[in-house]
Image 1: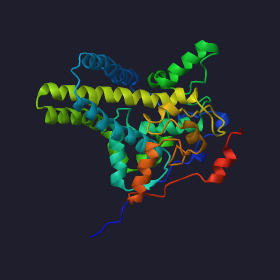
Image 2: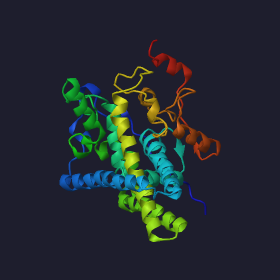
Image 3: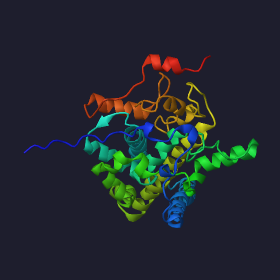
Image 4: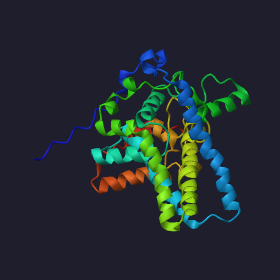
Length: 328
């Protein structure tokens, strides 16, 4: 007997949050739990890929790097990056389009394999960031309470890039910002099984390396490149959206914050670096809003839409873009 699919959970409504000028209420800040353990795990996830990068660099320098490792790196980087950009960000955070539970779960799994934390925590922090962008309450602004001059700028950039990961006094409360995802059985399951999918992101390159290389050395080399190096690159591309894209680049639209478009970062970030565009139109499925603004995530969504796998894709109208455009 056919069953009726569960409806897509209601999106988060920014009107539910405290007014911007009031700052965050206690209910909007996640209660710190097991902070010491969280910081230790964060340090492990952050430092280990960085340390292994030197091993990878030595391997490349000694010409023991094979094309299969590069291919595996790219083959894992692209889908896990899209899991973050299309899945975590445009679908689950901003509801820029709709899709089936199966594809929603696949994107959540791929994003989790990037090892940037459980999906619901990620979304809660990002939704809070949009409500309090570059104001008190923003979990990772480079412009709030970091001092002035070069020292203040460097301190702010460090905080926005990685420092905020170790601080828990402005993280978004799950119950406040992600009630829709907590109620979503697919996303909630992926969130609870974070460790499983993170380990799968290492097991896949290991298996591919063994399959293509035929021995344990090839499997370990593939895990190094398709696992540790991939995670390192994707982490710091994502972190650069928080830091560099709120400090450097062009402002195409009026947004009331310090978001910027950073063209050189767009290819690696799958289009996320058109960050001023995104802050101007947060629910848009497309961040690249001009012909020369490459947006791989947007192109992916377009392809899925043509295939009938996603629908209700949000696009800003020409009139809305013209109304927000920066003069000159």
